[in-house]
Image (tube, helix red, strand yellow):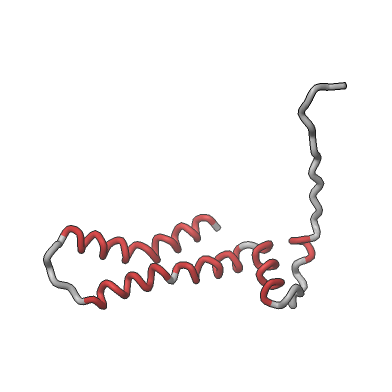
Length: 98
């Protein structure tokens, strides 16, 4: 999943970075404003792609998102193994022994 996230980030932000570097290194040259807004919109759309990647690749995230969208109930019923595991936390105290 990490590889997919990194590749998604690079694909979304590489055009914006390339255009920004082109503007810096070619100061004074005229360019069409649409050529600047298209990479910017594409880069900002990565906020839409990230949750989609998480939903498809992470079972626990998918279960939580389905519960959020459907008001606490997962319509697919596959959340049993993702959220029923219980964890026990042991508390230790630091101090002088009595």
